Image 1 (cartoon, helix red, strand yellow):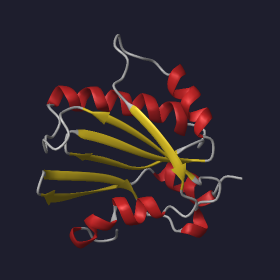
Image 2 (cartoon, rainbow, N blue to C red):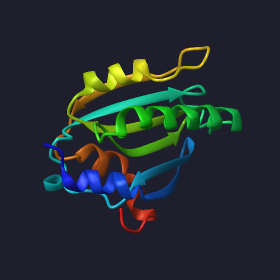
Image 3 (spheres, rainbow, N blue to C red):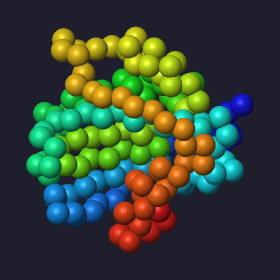
Length: 156
């Protein structure tokens, strides 16, 4: 059963952006609002992280305009593939230290993988890495991703 709150937040498609500077440089997070609580996320208990490295780790690099354009096109295709029927929920996008990370919540990572393989590709394969883990209460989103940005962002 899909959470009504998740589906409603997907449909509203409201985002907030926050920045944070670390020893490695600027970090940017874009996340859907409102940030849902544990009791509102039934049916979306697994995290699927999609990572696109665009520069060396520990470089602190931000993407070039060409990188940003390619990653934007990828994000549009990925969201069309997995969000159109609320199969997955893109909760946050992080850009920092030479990589962009998309954080999805779903209950069927295998189906997300099938949809990712079936979506339109460019001439070269996308340079992405995937991993997944259980997070039924969305602690990863609230604590690991948004936690470091709290002091700079109202409403997180």
